[in-house]
Amino acid sequence: MFSEEILASRTKNMGASAIREILKVVMQPGMVSLAGGMPAPEAFPTDLIINLARTVLEKYSSRALQYGTTEGFKPLREQLASYLSGVGVTADADEINITSGSQGLLDCLGKVLISPGDKVVVESPTYLGALQAFAPYGPDYIELETDSEGVVPDSLEKILWEHKVKFVYLVPTFQNPTGKTIPVERRQKIASIIRERGTLLIEDDPYSSLRYRGTAVPPIHKFAPDQVLYTSTFSKTFAPGLRIGYYTGPEFIRKWLVLAKQGVDLHTSTLNQALASEYLAGGHIQAHLPKIVNIYRPRQEAMLEAMEKYFPRTFNWTKPEGGMFIWVEGPKDLDLDPIYQQAVGEKVAFVPGKYFFALPGSGKQTMRLNYTMKDEDTITGAIRTLGAILERSQA
Image (tube, rainbow, N blue to C red; front, side, top):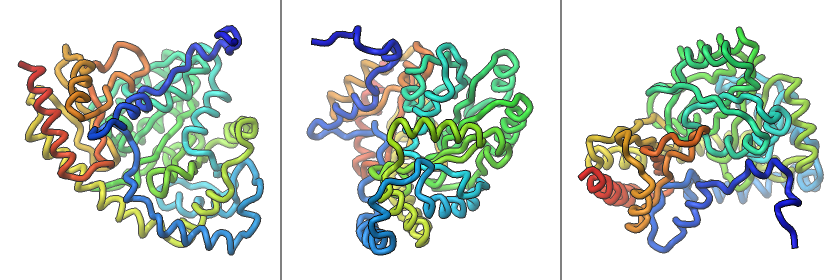
């Protein structure tokens, strides 16, 4: 009955998530998925959530079930102000807003900030979900140069001098998809550059709590609070199904993001926000994070050890100090698409890296691996299988 004539012109920039399509494949019986970025179900504090739900209903009664303000549930914003101060982000409760996961914020940023043809600067590669959120609004992407330590600040400085840029989007800590972390000296340099140029930076920080080794690095927001919109989420440290994200940043931008959210969902679930508030208020996050880390650390170590043993010497990969991902690069002339098909045929799935580049044609020789969803023995076996397939591709 209907045809594409009924659709808005922006839909030409919309497409199904490559990763979501891959996840349909990994639902096949016997498939070992190293593809998704989902937290392990055993990392969810299920028993605690049952108790928190009782506490919330006793403490807030019908208030936890009622409509709320778009900015967010005030007790949660107050708890977040205290919590964020511990990670280097200084903000009052009224300067923190709640979103329906980080993805909801990314879409609102696109809606509020991007007009067709606006230049948006991203890492190369970058988070696929951000590309999906921004793309319908028609930006022109500019990719930053990166190396083993993430973004090269000189590349950012050159871009900002040569182009009028709407904003810069970065995942500085345990980046998705590479797992890289920008060191503090580079963060300070990046902060200096955006202050000098008056540029808005979106700092997406969902993974920094998942640190297995090394020393925590302060967020870029600490060095340029007037230029940085900092955002994070409870999806990796509590439960993703609650869809609770949050952000703080320049007042002018916050005001417009609230208006955009009002048109989308009015506000994030009051009940879920109350659960997150009590999770923080009771000190439960400090008690639970070590349990999550103790699940993921040995899985990451098992993957890295197996890769060292089974992957061809022509491949290189990141060795992150935390997060959920390892990034693999093969020889420049390699195309991992047929290798992905072979791997699926042998019941192992990964994500081809090409999907994480803003500009088409890049990353055919790369892949992203995830280790959070499988136990150590399963990971070792899957890497052995994948390594054998890669070896055959080099023959």
